[in-house]
Image 1 (cartoon, rainbow, N blue to C red):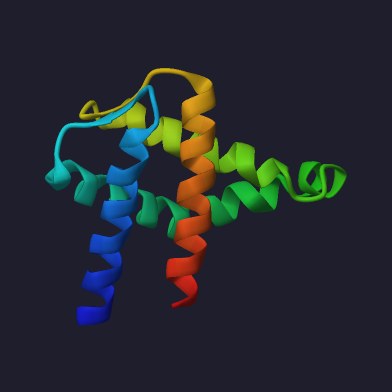
Image 2 (cartoon, one colour):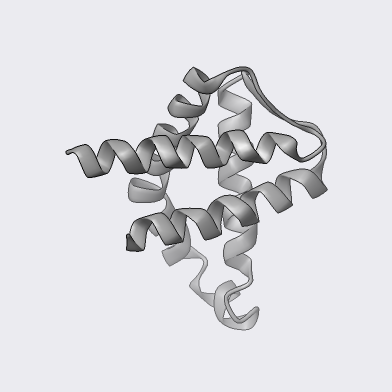
Amino acid sequence: MIKLFIKWVIFALIIMGTCYLPGINVENFKYALIIAAVITLINMFIKPIIKLAAIPINLMTFGLFNLIINFGILYAVSYFIPQYHIDNLISGFIASLVIAVAYTMLKKA
């Protein structure tokens, strides 16, 4: 249980770290914790369904379409949580890349 809590806090810190990119804002750490929980739940329950539906596109793009899926999830989270705001697409895409790499490393640990 402690390990799960530590991973959650680290993931929230990573989300707060993406705020240094221009065009990405999180009001405070409390909302970063909420965002981390929402992204984790989406990655556990909804993302496998999306990836299953996107298998043909992933095969054609050699898996690069997963980056678009990650960006879509991050943008959807920013839409539903108004305290997390993405201003432009480039910053959102870079943030989704950073979050995807960090989430993968946290999942392995």
